[in-house]
Length: 186
Image: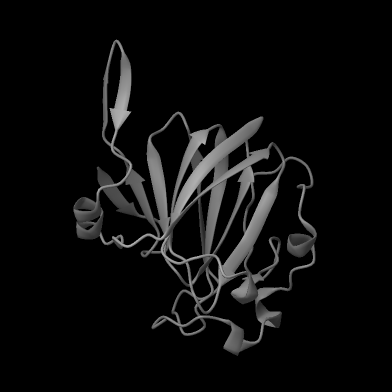
């Protein structure tokens, strides 16, 4: 596997090693020692799967406390995956990075705790999975507005996205009280 930092150094792109022949292919999607050596924690407590259709945008979501690091992989279709640094004391606070993930390319993205996460579906439909470093705690989850002009995410959308109410009504990052935001330490 090859691990490459993206535009925010803590967010990592993982290119998986694929072994293929006439029968198909095989890839290892998780191995604790190898991932730990790459800087990705070895303790995951929850696996999730999500299915959406073209035009759906989910996010930007974060939990604090109980921040969740996420290791994301697309199994079907293609998404544009985004991480925004929302750690109030970070030198990259409010900056974002995005990457297209496709089932056609054996890749994962690691988004550490302290980053808001969102994605939009680029293909007709998409199915992806992600491992989490903490359990889902709905009482600690908050959303940041997906189109916050101060963040300026360049979503690859041709039309207005299909949003959940909580994402449509989410506040800008600047409107979220500082004590609701995580720090680099936790």
